[in-house]
Length: 225
Image: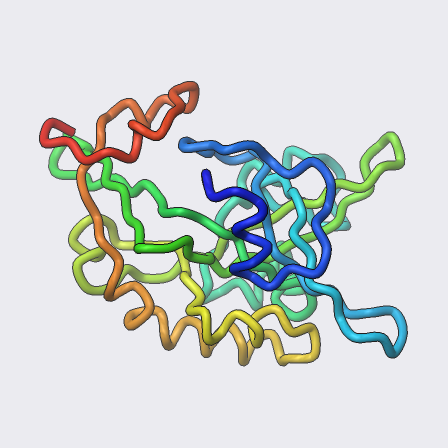
């Protein structure tokens, strides 16, 4: 994610920006800090405030005993998230958008794996969930998970799953804390095939498999994989 914070503020109509926004990162592994857009329900009759926050990628629910729970909760299957104890409260009350310039997906053929970069002409947004967890030192950790769904169209030839991408038209409803969470999730799943139809994909260098590798050259097209 390399889009500047100022551009995200304009694109997602942000009211307030939280502290410690992450720097540009072209190779983001779970447990890394990522930007997310949230619109929590207000405590009084005031209108909701849309915020850009920094969150740990890997959901740590409020009831978790340890932060390590988030290591296995960086993705959530959209088909079952509303029923899973790990994610169901967030589906109902704490839905987020996770901005992204694109994502890496690996195609497996036999023993060979080839990385692809999937992207659009502008930043996209994944359907996300978020949670606050009280850390042992008394401070609060904000964390997030990205919802996934069955891949469709050309993307299905790369991998059977894909992140659940929210269209610009559905972003307000997805974030709205007064919307029924399960209904909002069903609506985003239903429109997913048309949302990703205009995305492009190209092969990138295998270096993306090393999380220590960084730089914009990681998303450049290559013919070698």
